[in-house]
Each structure stands twice: as C-alpha cells, then as structure tokens.
Image 1: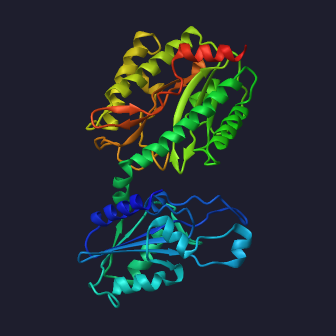
Image 2: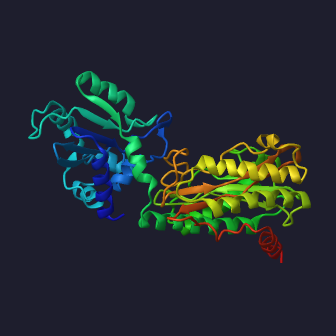
Image 3: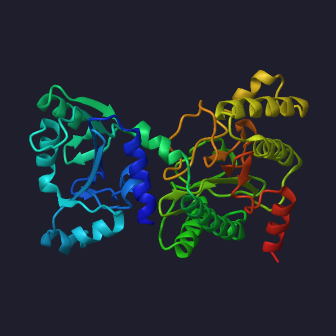
Length: 422
C-alpha cells in the first residue's frame, strides 16, 4: 500500500476531529480460542486502513490542537522469546517505512505520551480535552481490556476529558474507495471467479458440500498468495439453501437439487462477496428456472438503477415490489404480502475491508461506494433456495458490475455444466 495514500487518510481523519483532541486507534490483541490457544489474529481494519500495518498490540495516536497536527505510532519492543515462538515483529524502521509515520515509538512510552497530551504538562499548544476511541464492541487492546473499558479508565483518570467515538469518522472515509482499493477489490473478484469455475467443474450428484468448499478454498489460496476467504463459504444444496447462513456443509448434493453458494476470496483484506445458484445435475427443472429467472430479473434491475442519491432501503423496496408481482403472476405466492415468507433479507450492504462493511443503509449512496446486489427466493417446502449476488461499484451516474464476468445466465450455466461431463 502506498504511504502517500495512508498519509492522506490520516489527514482526512484529522480534518474531521474536533480541535483539542487526540485519537487512539488500536490494532487489537489476540483472543483466546481455548485453553492456551488463540484465534488467528485479525488486525482492526480501521487501524490497518490508516497505517497499512497488520501487527497486534500497536497503537496509532493522532493529535489535533490549535491548528497543530501530530501523529505517532507505538509498537511492541523486540522480544527474543516471542520471536522464537511466533516470528519476528516489526522494527521501528520497518513500521515507519510501511506506514509513512516518522514518529514511531516503543509502546511503553504510550501512557506517558497520553498523560502529557491530556494534562498539558509537556504540550506547547494547551491541554487536550477530548479523546477519540474506536468503541466497536469486542475490540480488545489488552488481555482483559477492551476500548470500551479503557474509555472508563481514561474518564476516571482525567475527569474533564470527553470520550468520543472515532468509528463513525473512519467509516465515512472507508466508504469512498480509492483507485488502489478498487483494484484490490477487482483482484479479489477475479480470484473468486477462478474458484467458482473450479467448484462448478466438480459439481455432480453425490459430491459432498464440504468437498466443494475445499475445492474453492484451495484454488483461491493458490491464485492469491494465501490471502484467504472473505468469510466461511456457504455451500448449501437442496433445502439447506433456505438457511441464509447455512453453517456446516456436510450434506450431499443430490440429483435434481440446486446448489447455492455464497463465498468470496479476499485480497489484502478487501473482500469479494458473490452468490450463485447451480443445478446439481446440470439442468434446471421448469420450476427451478422460473424461480431463478425472477431472482435474476431482480438482480439485473438493481444493477440498472443503482446510482448516487438512492439509498439501499429504496433499492430494497423496489426489489420487494418487483419480486412480489412476479411471484404472484407465476402462482408462487397468493398475494404480494406473502413475499416476506420467501424473501427475508436485505438486497444490499456495503463491502470493503469487511464483507458487511461500515456504512448507513439509510443514507444516500455516493460515487465510489461498493455494495452487494443479492436478491433471493427461498421456498423451503419445495427444497429450493436461489440467490444471485454481484458486487457493484457506484459511479458518478450509475454503477459498474465488478463481478459481471462471473457466470449467471441460466443457459450459460447449463452449457458449462453439460460440457463438464464430456
């Protein structure tokens, strides 16, 4: 990641901070999985967005006071024992090179620096009386401390200091994607397409859902330098597809059923999020195709109308109206109000460093937002679940379907699946 872009992000955040304030953004702390085993560490994405650093136990400090701006990065010191067990940590020089921050300090000096800024004892520009913290739930910064509990510690130690939430300010920045971010996102989609085509090539009656999940994971990691999955892949056949976040892909794909997949590769933390639905035996039944084409029609409608100024809520209402009328006309439901029984999720969410990324669905879309487009229909009594999801880049006057190249036309799907058997 270019240090110039990181510097511009930090400047933009400083521009949004109130005068006389300091922001503390923590990279996070490993969480215990069981006994002495931790979950794989995942950096706080807002910290990564501002620094380009993935290491745990680091802190970014930004100060805005009387027109002066300062930025500091605090990192853990070298620990020979930890290096032997877990690998080398960043040096001060490496952290500075990655982030573009000149003032990189060892974390033992963090509390003294906070003390000096909040007390004004060593400040040339007066006392800071506001502290911004990322108050997202469960953001651990020490073994037994979260940012929320740390805010209480600061309030107790400095009674005159106000605690503010920095998360909304960073969210505003993260919503607007740069050219570099869009390129990384496009790479994640390209890799996802490779994985989907490999999965399709292995689809046949009798294959296990988890076998297809393994094929996808192997291909995307092989192509993408082990960047990993955007989220745990949903591989759901038959009536399993009517559970939106079907958790355990242990079922067998059966002749005559549909397979719904919801998955994605990620590239440098940018998450693709794609859903497709395929006939296990390579051929849609007439009823399956009818339901599929209603969902595909809704998907295409969203792509044709999404633009700056509309809200995700408005897109949802249009999808509900479209699919309700189509389902009634095809005899799938009796009246429009019945659609809620077979369509019970939102058509869209923001995507970025998180699959369900930061952003308010009730606010108008802006150019350079990236959103999902994922209508679906779920008839549990018929054992049919269909979802078709693309990733849309909002442009100045419409949108671009970044995942247009991932197969979804029913005739093209049948042609591909039939050629697979030759």
